[in-house]
Image (cartoon, rainbow, N blue to C red; front, side, top):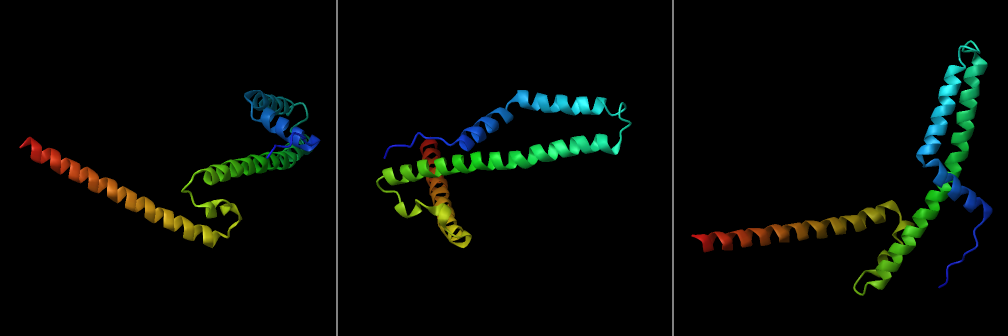
Length: 143
């Protein structure tokens, strides 16, 4: 299966924006704008219009960023799911029924998780018993 290399303009924009907005320089730009806005407060008499400028600006940026970040997050999540599915598929004794868990209802996921929680408890119990047996053997050998 060959990956498709065509990337839509929106995907390129979303990736670039998410990449840029996560950098320290983006934070510094936002901080600089906020400080500049604060410094202009006395010039505009801390008016309602002055406050509306920052409120409108931050609302617009937040509104647009939600969609771009969600798009990036969805793609990343899907890629991780595909990679995990491939690992499950490639392991000989893995349960292939686990390949598409993200498609199940929450109650089904809870039931499956409970089974794995039980397996983990049994494994920890086995380790504790092994450690106790090992300690008992070491203690009897040191007497």
